[in-house]
Image 1 (cartoon, rainbow, N blue to C red):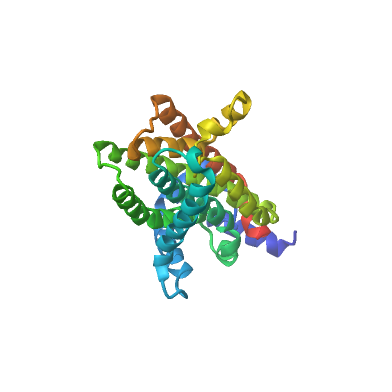
Image 2 (cartoon, helix red, strand yellow):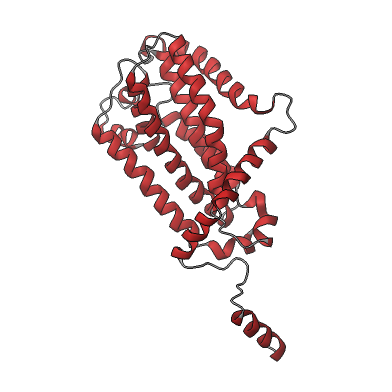
Length: 287
């Protein structure tokens, strides 16, 4: 290192300046995330507006797409499954599609949150975890009106309104935590392995067909105890199970399901945050 560069480095150190993209201690990182929480909220609003800016229907597409999915899957699988379809099939299907869409969007949008904002990551020094957090917040903005429409639709097809419907609030809270952890993990993996972005549609489709969106997981495994245990352990299935127990007649969940869902949500958030933070200094170089 030359005397000039050494002198510049010493001056920067004395002024407490840091190189862009360095990984701070986790305690300071958490503090920075909290201080800049307004950025995540504002950026999520901008992302939501920008995603539909060139569309005539605008944000209405966020309602139209799940409505079309419900119609198509309701017609196709309602006929294909015949008498083996779950009881109260339409509210069962509506709940599954709306809630699954949030989790799949958190995964796919989270995976692109760093690479789609490469110029921002390279030029500004801020906690990069705010980017996957912001895309999940953006999807929460999309989810909330969908949930209202979902509940109206469930009521319209014959489900009675009960006090149990309020249980959907903690379900959504747990799903939001789960989605943030999932987005953080996907964001780091996509930066490290760019080819992962090509696999996202496949992974999402596998999750769709193994989470009990349009069929009952309880009957899929038959007498295969191992397969049944694997399907029952799917956290997305558990979220749907406790949501349906609140909204759809004839479906129940126990305290164990709530504990399992809470452990998945909090656990994945903590693991995802630490996993993302450990690669903080790599994001500016690898995107």
